[in-house]
Every structure is written in C-alpha cells, then in structure tokens.
Image (tube, rainbow, N blue to C red; front, top):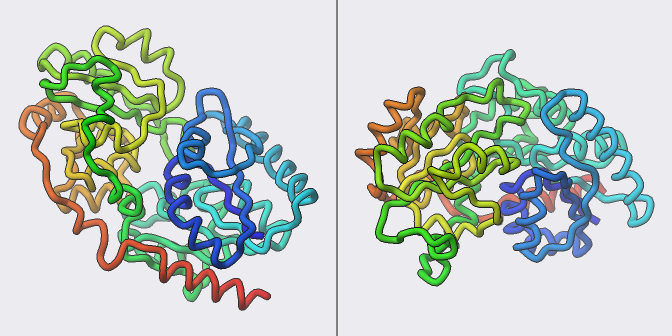
Length: 358
C-alpha cells in the first residue's frame, strides 16, 4: 500500500494527476487529508476529483500551540488507521509535517515533493521554514521544481543523490486542461455584467507558518478599485468569509462556493493575489497578475524576473498597474515547462527507489 497525505488544495490537484501512474506501482493507495471549519478547500477539491479519501485530524489554526496539538492528534490517528488497513510501504506527500514525522517514526520511507523550502528567494539559515526543518531532514527522496536550486535542499541535510529536479512548475499539469466554455462562466451564476472587466482577488495565506504578518494592502485596495473603475470585483476567501462580507459586500462579490479552475480563469481579466499557487496558475493562463504578497519566494522571483507578474507594496502602485494591464493577456506557457510536463521520469524514479527498499 502507498500512502498519500494531502494537506493543501494544490497538492490535491498535483497528486490527482499522478494517481493513475502510481496505481501501476501499487494498486492499493490510501489518501488522507485534514478538515476544519473555515479550512475545507482540500476536501472540496478531492470531492470534485472524485477520489476516495479519509479525513484525519484538522488544521490547527494560527497559533503555534494549536498547530502543535493538531499535529499530535493527526499522528495518533494515522497509527490507528494503519492498524486497521495495514502499514504503507511509503508516504508520498507535499508539505505535511505530521505525515512525514509519523512515517519517519514508523520507519516508512518518505517521498517528498517540496517547492517552498525557505521563505525567501536567496538562501539563508534564518529563512528556513519551520515546515521544512520538520520534514526535509526526515525525507528519503525529495523532488523539487527547477526554479528552486538543488543546493537549498542539501543545506537541510538531504543526500544529494536523493534530490531530484523536475523540469516543470507543477501547475502546468492541471492548468493545461482548461478550455474556455461559455456555459461554465461563473459570472453568469453570480449575475455579474459579462461586458465589464472582471478582477479576481485572492487573500494571502496569512495563517501559514511562513507568513510573518497579514498586510492590509489587498483589503485597502478593494474600495479604491471599486471607486475608480467600473469593473466586476470578486473575492475568493482564503479561510472564513464572514468578515469579508461585513467589510466588502458593497464593493465586491464574495465567492463562498469552491469553483473549478475552468469556471473562473477563462473569464477574469486580472488577478490580485496574496498567495502563490493561484498567482502561478493565472500567469500560466496568460492573465495579468498583481501580487501583494508579504514575502517573495523562488517562484515569485522567477515570475517577476520574466515579466510574468507584478509585485506591489502600495495601493498606488497596484492601481497604476491595473489601469495599464487589465485584459492584457500573454502566452506564458513556455516559461513553466522546460521539457515534458509529465510524471514519467518521476514515477520511474519512485518505482526504482521502492524496489531498492524491498
């Protein structure tokens, strides 16, 4: 049995693309995830993908104590399910502290997809993320995208022979499937005027371990954009939505449903994003992206250096870029994939690794 622990929506999409190929290695695959009120995107994505999964534990929240207690509880629940279903031959994951630590403690090899080892785009020990410190040194095999230098992972004590670079940024695996279908246009569902430009706003993942502060810029921008432009404004909440409704309902539509990528990306003219994955997805699709992120990671720097995304620190900067760039679509796909965007080499490496472990 192979075990996949999925902690974020991105990895739900990522591993769903790998699922069929992994079945060729082992037909018995256990998928686990976590669920909390206000943090249910992973479950919704897995439901969309029609994958069978088990909910074990929850997202601890913002405080260190709550995160720690949630991890302890999940680890205990992992052991319980293994006692019922059998112990896996390997864990496959991305950004799962409790999954990696449980696997390591039970002598289960860890196959780790890691794209955010530090909270910067130049290495320093001070910028090592807590998650990476708790997972990378315990990982047996590490896969990473070409935009992050291999040397970064070596600094965490991973054997250089077990660090594998793949020549694509993972979002191209699922974004390439998106085709524009007017019948799926989310603007119709929310009674938006389709003759107007549409801006989608996505909050920063401010509860994440690597985010130091919740910057106000993205929230300050909402009334300013509404007052200056006659655009559709749509907010896609990161966590809870009640406080967004209370503050911004007069300016924007707050999306509470989980939309599929093909329901909104083909129908927006600009993304204002505080996070990472959606900024990458929109950029790949050719949509102008304004990043308000409080920090820059390797992926962010890559996008900025190649003129695929604008990073702003003030509302005036953002307004100026919105005015110039809205609806200015580009063909950016070649920047995301150096060779073939597929799992062939990755699956072959996992297969040989597991055979060596027998």
